[in-house]
Image (cartoon, rainbow, N blue to C red; front, top):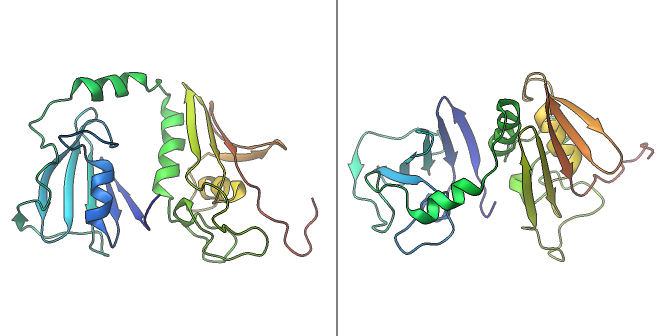
Length: 225
């Protein structure tokens, strides 16, 4: 959420496309002296000039951070510009295992909903009705509240267990936009439905529920509360 990123989900692989891959990769790949990162992620190889291929040890899935707008990369391998990333031959550290053990178990439907949040990080309706804006801005510049920096835009909390999860945040995007991105025609998750309960918006998939608590979209001309 610190940079503009386009997510390209593929089978057992998530590709993150960004114009600053050398800045994004350190947020995700653990380094030898600690720091915030994704526990269990390891650098497999570096391709071309700006593509990091990483493997997540606990799941076996691949995560790619690339500066290629096409979301592809060449076959030429080069030494990584960062020497301090853990490589795939480095097993999980005790600290990483402790972090992973703290994450509650979740059902398959809940996993699908939470994955939907990640893969739609830059999604936008071509008709201009909603947009996610990488979770820090409104690319549609709609009238009403706009982020002027007066609130902490990185105030976000996701927690839950099994098939019930709650996501709270205090900046962009609007709650309705997030729910719509998960349920809209074509881009939505098949079978997911949106339910406005007044104080929150819920997205439900089979027996799983994701409760969304955040800023509501301003009323547009002609709308009523």
